[in-house]
Length: 159
Image (tube, rainbow, N blue to C red; front, side, top):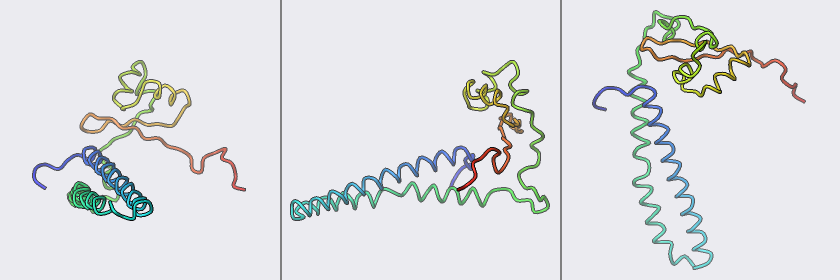
């Protein structure tokens, strides 16, 4: 892998794309298998050779991106900073959060945009008094963490 490492967001977006592409290839292969079966049943298998060539093409070209995405994640995992002296690796330096209602007071549209959600979703979360803390990261981005009781109160008992 040459060049700078992608961010986790870029890597996850690429992984999602590659998985969707692989899913599409698998769906095409499934359709080809069904077509081969139908050709065998109704035409004595006369067209199976052509269908097989299409299936071989998908096999030869379909998963290269998946393999490269796996390699990319392996490199990301190996390059992640490690600090054995810190028991809570990755959680340091973030600081404390502020409640969602406080973060968005008087500026719900801007707050929603920074969080990547709609203003309606933000307003609903505030009105329902969800326990959400907003953390500002060192790069200026924000992330929200919700604390929930487990098991959820008022859940139905298993029967």
